[in-house]
Each structure stands twice: as structure tokens, then as C-alpha cells.
Image (tube, rainbow, N blue to C red; front, side):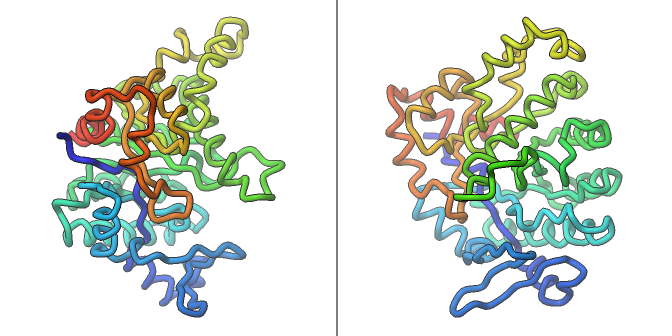
Length: 328
């Protein structure tokens, strides 16, 4: 039986929270006590600080309740800090990476780490990437699907992508803002629709811009079951056949790039996971809980069993074999 490995598990480590307490002006955020709960606050946005965000013991206790063996922890979007000046962004990234390494050291058999990068400064991002690989042994790195409105396929980020590829690391891309504006302000739609849409826009640009051809060995993990990609990839193909714009930088159909990506199973609907597995292959699907945010899958193992016609081999791949291949 493969280990159950969660590739979508968030933290906001203690060294970063301490820095917010010490200098909220520099980091454009603060930690605030409201009754019995603590929040990380930036502008009008407040995120409750579940203990599993910053306490390694609490993270592992939650994993035990969810039936998970290993979590590869990545910083939550409230601590991306791409909006900061370059020097503060680098300082924030280093604090987060130090905190993630400390959590991993507390439970090395249960936790692995992903680096975060100061993407507003690609040169600093590359330096921090190389440092985390050397000093902490991280095997994965997380970035946003965009950086303050600039998509990951932008030429300025290509050296970062190439370095990730050259270091043999895998890239986890997670949205944090809606690139597409309009109609997202009500009902929390910026998360329900905006996050999957941002992932879809990022994937389309990575494919059609030729970025994936420039980085042929780059492995990319997509959260939230790949956004809308698994369900609209055929539309990309049709567009490639009938529109000259789609052929400007690539010479093959978009579906030929679909297995360049890995997809977590966080669709919240068993039939959607069945389609994901059928379209992309079980060896490209992983567990992703999104814990401890409220949009998480609170019973990932049991919910996977609700997927129609799930075979023993598919279960093995999704539980851990796909993640192990990414982690080396």
C-alpha cells in the first residue's frame, strides 16, 4: 500500500508571524487577536490562524485525523508577499522558508517542505530557490499562478522556471488573486470561480506561449483538480485547429501538453475526479486537501472511495505513487 501523500497542505510559519508582530508596517500585515481567535490581517482581509498553520504537532495531529501519512507543506497565499518591495519580499520569503524547514525538522518522517520565492524579483527568487535546495533539501517549490497580475508565462519569469527545471524540483502553482476581473466580488466567487479560473488562464498561457517547450523537463502541479483545464482542454484543441493565433508559438495540439501537469483530486465531486483520472491518467493525480483552510477536503481518503469505478491501481497512484514520482 502506497503512503498517502498530501501535496496541497498549507502553513503560515511562526517566524513569519513573529515578523508581522515585530514590524507590521514593513510587511503590510499584522497578527490580531479577536476574542479567542488569532487572525492574519492585510487591509480588509482577515484569515483565522488555525494552529495547524504554524504548529508542526497540530499539523501532524490533523493529518492523523485525515488518514494521511505525509504532507508536503506550502505557504498559504496570505503570506506570498509578492505585493511588498523587493527587499521586504525577500526577507518574508526567507522567514517563511526557515519556518517551513523548522516544521519539517520537527516531524521529518511526516512533513516535507516546499520553498516560497520572492517572485517580484526574479534574480532574488533564483538565489532563494538555490539556497533552499542546498540548505533544506526541498524538492518542490510553490509560486502563484500569477504575480501581481503578471502571468507565470511572462518572459521575466522564464529564468526562474528554467532553474526549477535544472534543479530537478517540481513546481506547485497556487492562485491568490483573480486575474480576470468582474463579477467576482460577491458570494466568495473570487475563490469558487476565481481560483480555478486563474489556474486555467495560467495553463493556457504556459502552453500557447511556448513556455512549456522552453522548459521540457519542468513538472507542474495544479491545485483544485486543475481548475477548468481537464474539462475544457478539448476547446483548446479546437481553437488550435481553427485559429491562427493559437499556432503562433506552438506546433502541436494543447492536449499533447496535458500530462506535463499533475492535478490534485480536490474537485469536491466524485464524478469530476473520475473525469480527471480518465482524461489525464491516474499517474498524474495526487491527493490535495487544502488544509487547514475552510475550502479543504475534510475526509480525502473516504471521498476518494466515492469516485466511480476506482481501481486498486488508480487508488495506489492517487494515494502516493504519483507524488513519490514527483518527489523523486
